[in-house]
Image (cartoon, rainbow, N blue to C red):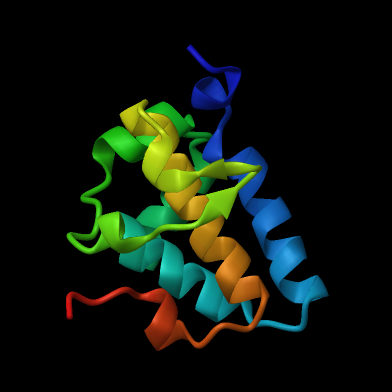
Length: 115
């Protein structure tokens, strides 16, 4: 099991925020994309941060967006679609959409839709 699975989401979230701000984007868009992906409300997201919910528990409780499988590309040198572990794939989906928001990609494009 990856050490990342037991890492609290609240320990990583400030890094997502810092990256987003550093690249001139809004925390509101960051939170919007995280809630889109996970199905959590902003209040539920804040609760997970405060409760130090591990990534494993965070994604166990999440209702992943039905279009999450449309998130493709490379993250950390690995193609998302080639990741076999379901939890690691969900974490990399999150990493990918955070990167896209931080890079200034429009929110409506980051929120994948079926064609």
